[in-house]
Amino acid sequence: MKKLLLIFTSLFCLTTLFAQELDSTEQVTEEAVQSPKKQTADFVMQFEPGLYLNTESYLVSAPSPIVYPISLGFLWPDDSKIAIQPVVSFFMMNHLYYEDKALPAEIENRTTTTLNFMLNIPAVFSIYREKSRFQLSAGLGVYMRFGLLSPGVKENDSGWTGSAGEDVSKINEYFWGKMRWLYATAGGSWLYNLTPQLRAGPTINVYAPVGGLISDKNAQGMIISAGIKICR
Image (cartoon, rainbow, N blue to C red; front, side, top):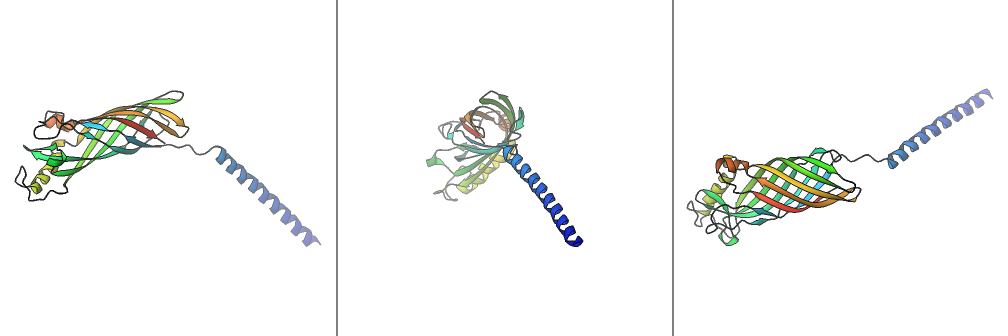
């Protein structure tokens, strides 16, 4: 009888402890649902058509073309007045080689189809309003360009250096030579709170060719863009 009473007492104690533990777990779960973990970074997407400045003669190369970058990145931290916003932009262009320079080309005169990647790493200063925020940014960019022989153009076709194939090599050397890949960037955005997790609004950005200004003494390749910025 004593053993049976001891067993029932032990079972009662274990049941009580289990119930208390379960209540504690449920309380923590409810608190987690009611107070979800705060997001610390925003995913950023930008659609910003831009003007690519061509300072050379339009008789040989194309007028300053309009480019259509698509930009992806993130803003960290998302709730601070000062943050960083690494962004990669991608677009395509056509180029030719003339007088030792890689210049924008119209499609009928192109030698390369050029893949363009702009890695922009600016600091962002945010001014908060009740239903929006205004952002100013400034930083450095790395402009990565890769010229590929355009479809329909053959390597042994005529070129400035003698052949189109050799022109492609010279175009790529020009892109990476004399720090022409180094840019200074600046921009501004006005984002509206569409939902607690989604913001969108106009953005404008300027990409200045620091390397080109120093080595070539001109603003060839400067990009001025304006479009829509989305943060989530």
